[in-house]
Length: 173
Image (cartoon, rainbow, N blue to C red):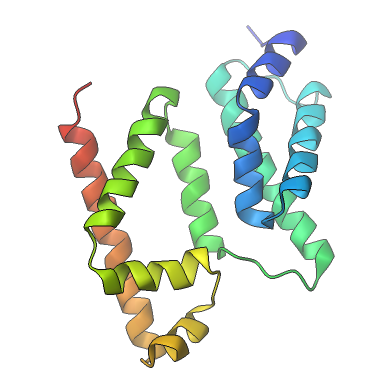
């Protein structure tokens, strides 16, 4: 049975911060992220899509928020994209598969894993993802070769993935 308009709106409003955060990760502007959330809510109520479950609605909402953000950036032409397409796809996949109760524990596991990394690794991740530098800029900042940056990032991604999975399997249910 499809969710009612009221059910859709209640669910979206209860997850407003998370959906807006998904848009903010792309556009890096709180006002634009809020506009994107409102567009997502309007589209959800426009009866273009029927949602048979909360999970289907939330998956659709996160994907739509991300795509709306990317479309907004494309229209801006001069606005830098802070996260590359690969990272955005990983986030999208994570949100689509994430159960609501697991969100806090997964975020905590990520924070714990990041804190366990060596300072140089944390600095690399900060430059790349939090400061929004391109890999070429990171390589210049760290006075190293571009290929080395790609390899270090790949190893860090794998290490973080393994660390998070380990912490989640060890966590009490």
